[in-house]
Image (tube, rainbow, N blue to C red; front, side):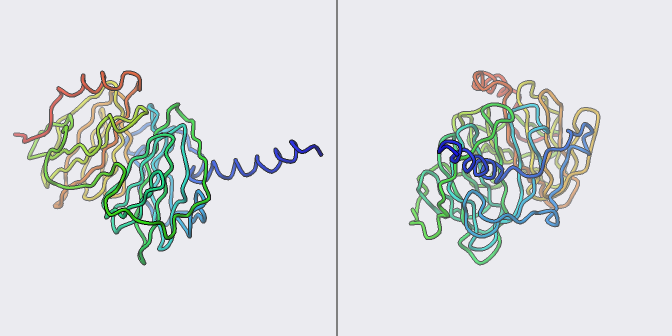
Length: 314
């Protein structure tokens, strides 16, 4: 056998295995009804994966949403738990951007070889072409969320470095972009959300300039008990909502469905939606906005901005 044939025979399986490291199970046909589109976090369905992107220990996760759930370039939403002394190894994506979020505890985040500890709930976005990793250095599992947006719909890639980041030197101040959650009312830039009842708090955690792809923003939306948002339609922006805590109801189009902590909800382009808190505790939502057209992202965002910036309803 010629040398190039031997190399091809060895390299191809390695590429296939590496590329599927975080891809989750094969995508099912896209659901159409609102209740069927909402996916619930079920720890009993978490699948144990060792050496994810060459990382240490074990990551347990499930694919909440895959690319067929979206009409934008949102690619997937994964949810899981990083076990103690475990993590995702350093790797690149050259065709997509992603963001690791920890919902509790703390973990060591690495971007471009610089490592810092973030205390949850927090996250760090990663632009295309930058290496990144996460490692749980503690003695307790860390609840983890992964969001991924591609440059071209359905196209995913990765290049693993074989670096677990165990024992990496730490910077006391992160040398990369981070986001931290809080309930302090509208923050930088706000977000196009108005209240129909009560006071709705919406804080823009990451704005469009952070991302190179059609990924436009990350918001933190909080509805106190009894509050509701007014119906909202974004013609050129699809949104994905993850319920961080609480319970409530979403209305999208002519349908309504119950939502609770751990649910992931895709909302399509030009689909009118509203939220209501039906519980006694605050309803907290992580919101990811992805525009229809990356080349017109800032024009689209500017056009959407006058829709409102949160506040008090009647």
